[in-house]
Image 1 (cartoon, helix red, strand yellow):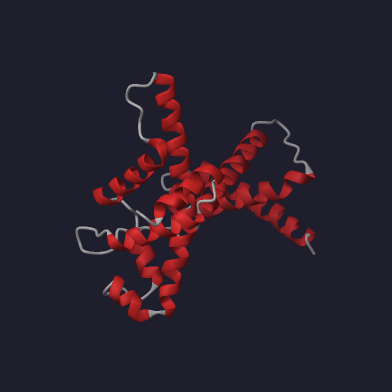
Image 2 (cartoon, one colour):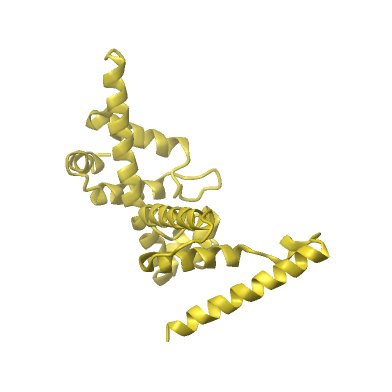
Amino acid sequence: MDKALPLAVVAKETRDCGPVAEVVLQTTLLFKTPKGLPDLRRSGGLARAWMADLLDAIGFAPPRLAPMDERKKVARERESLAQAIREALSPARVTFIRQLDDHPEERERLFPGFSSSDEIFEYYKIIPKAQREIRIARYNRRISLQKLGALLSADEPTIAPADGAEVVHAIHRLATALAPDLFDGADARSEELLRQELAETRAALLALEESLG
C-alpha cells in the first residue's frame, strides 16, 4: 500500500496508471485463492478490500453526508479510475505470465503444477489480450455487423468501396460460425434453395478473391 499510494495519486491526476498497475499486479501474487494460488483475477475479498482502501485513501471515499449529486460524482470518478487501472493491469498481467515461460523455476514456485503460460491463461480464464484491445475488437465487430444488417435490409444493397473490407470481414465471421447441423430438419425444397444460394455465394466470393490479384 505504501508503494501504491503515491502512484495512485499520480494516476488520479494524470491517468498514467501503468506504475500503480504494476504494484496492483504484485498484490495479486500475495493474495491467494482458496486453492492457494495467486489471485490473478482479484476476485477474492482481500484483493477487493485492498483496492477499495487504496481508492478511499486518495480521496474517493464515499462522502456519506454529502448531497446525492456529489456522492454520485465521486462514485463515477472512482469507477473511472478503477477501470483505467484495470485496463493498465491487463497487459501488465499478460506480459508477466508470458515471461514465466522463460523462468520455469519461478513459474513452478508461483503456480505449482503449471507447465506453460497457456495453461495459466486457461486455468484463470484470462484472455491474453489487453482489456482495451478486447473492447475495441468487440466494438468493431458490432459496428461491422450493424453495417451488414443495414445493407441486407435494402432491396438492392449498394456497398461503398470504403465499406468493402468490413463487409467481407463480417461475412467471414458469419460463415465460419455456421455448422452443418444448423440445417438439420430442413425440407427438400429448402435444401435445394440453400444449395443454390451457397453455390452463388461461393462463385461471388471466388470472383472477389480473383480481383485481389
